[in-house]
Length: 265
Image: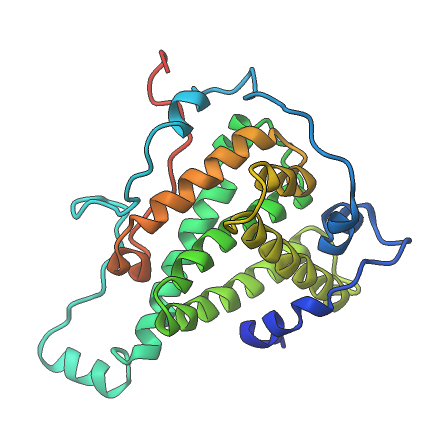
């Protein structure tokens, strides 16, 4: 139903601005519209009402996001033995494709866990709307796909499975939002927004990018406290890079928790 990730990426250069009568959601989020905007964000400091000390959190050094071996959040591959293992092996349960699909499901659960937690909206003073939630979802998908790409073709192939799971989840979210008519049209527009934002975020991290490029991109997609969000994103990029391949591929990692764990922070 949806074009594959590789084909869609090849069409990125063909993205055009949305029509002038597009809905407010799309006119605010569309990459082409964003790229044409000239306004720059104000230099907002960290949200004054944030429940955590963002300055302390996001200026700290990036670290691996891998879950400890004894973490209750870990999802490890089942280690069946004997006849059961033989049967499952015959049924291709342990094939590379099956293993990748299971890993992709866990990876996407990690993304959803961060996007749907109330803390991320409280910390950055974001309104919990479909637009904002979708923008956060795209942002964290980009973070993961960027990290997977660092592992070469194997990572890109796994990213394809994650992308297909994401597509299905977005369709469910759109349906739950009450958009049953013209669902395919909505999905096509959301797909364009996805790839437009992915390109924008990638460009903001290029060596020749301006220091505030990422901040500007985030301001145009989230309309939140872009300075704090930019520091969060840069820290997650660094932390994911420090996370080992096995933890990434199995989904046994967790984004930086945003809950306030001590009243004095």
